[in-house]
Image (tube, rainbow, N blue to C red):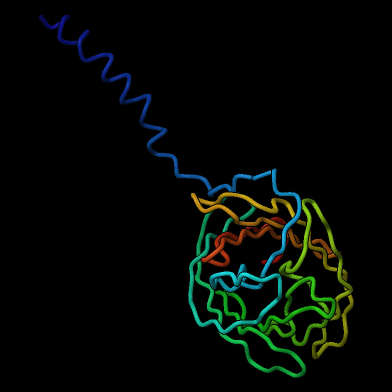
Length: 213
């Protein structure tokens, strides 16, 4: 009787032990599944703000006042999170700018002079910034790179550095939502981030790759 009892529960026990480690694993970071059929695309400002896109290929700094969450992925795979607060636009010097607050920064974002990107024009940690491309807008192609000669002005003086945007996935599906976008941002000094933005949501995923903390 005992032998029959143990033989009957042994397969169940093996399944429990085999499943134990899998159940203990934490879910990895969400992946934006690339839609490689999209080769070129107009990226509106609404991709940044999370507003519904306008039916026009024009860059419009429309009003926004919202808070939305994002996943924060560190180089070792650890996942955290935070909130983005975005308001504006407001007048700042000669710019129409969005006020953007994330856990580590208070920033102002405006269009670059060539209108190919939005970037910081002020950051509480740095000071005034000129010609920084941080978020691609307008017409972009899959795999395209653009570099910007950026100037950072602080109490310690002026610092010049090249910043580069690269489209990694011009169109991708993020947690069931199509039309998202993933791109990389790098500085000449080595800082590197990846970002995923989703229509109707704005920033959803930050990937810290090198430096920045």
